[in-house]
Structures are given as C-alpha cells and as structure tokens.
Image (tube, helix red, strand yellow):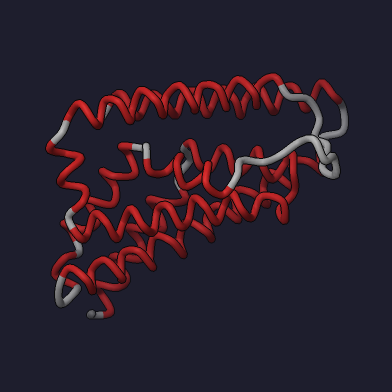
Length: 199
C-alpha cells in the first residue's frame, strides 16, 4: 500500500469513527457515569463489532443486506427502539454512581449488537471497501486491512469520548447540572437516530 493510500484510508477511518453519533454519545455517557475502566467492555464491543463489520463488508456480506430491504428495515426498526430506550434511560438519570454495583454500562455483546444493527455503519464500511479496494491484493487482505483500521480507530475515538465524559463527571457538582447533561446526552442520542431514517 502506498503512503498516500494509507494516509487517505487513515483519514477516512478517523473521521468516520470520531464524529458524533450514537456510539460516541454512549461512550461519553458511559465515561461520565461509570468511569473509563468500567466502560472498556462497551468500547471493546463497539470496536470489535465495527472491525468485524468492516471485514465482512470487504468480504461481500454487506451486499446481502443491501439486497434485502426488508432485513434492513427490520434492523433499523429494532435498532431505533433500542436506541430510544437507551436515550430515555440516559436523559432520566441523575448524578453518576461511579462505584455503585447496581449501575452497569452497556455490555460487550450489547455493544457489538448496537454496531451490527446500524445501517450507517454498514454504509460507512461498504463505502470504505469500495473506495479502498485497490489498496489490497484481494478480498482477504482488504478485509484484514479494513477490520484492523476500523477496530483501532473506533477504540481510540471512543476512548477520547469516554475520557471527555469522565472529565465532565469531575466538573459537574450538583444534581441539576447532571440532569441537564443527561438530558442533553439523551437528546443527542435520540437525534442521532434520525440519521438511520434519513439515509
């Protein structure tokens, strides 16, 4: 792969994974409420799910989803309901209980599922597979390259958003401030769902 091709791929993947959306909003909320360490399974699940999705798109599985609009619609509907439920939970929560045992961040498998039902993720990884296919010798090489690129980039970008949430947890002191932040994060997550239906 040429240096220019690598730079182009790296820029595409970095911008795709760090821009605000459902996963980044959840990472911010998770960092604020549970801290970085307890958010690692969630971030790892998103990163692995996106890496598998990118590899699958490069290998051709994404074409199956594009060929069956009913399957896409079902994924979109189920994903929307789940994300609306999460946004409601975030919006109604109060100050974080960073050491409470009852509060749990989204699980590793829940995070993988969140990525896999997201049509935006499929569109992004399919676009990458089509745009950067010439950088690899074949589908297997392309799958490995895109899987690694998206997995690493997602882990780094979600870590940044999670740390931002953790910093907010240290800045906000009153219950009213927390209710305001949680309402904003919940609303942002709900608004990000519109992207699923506007594509």
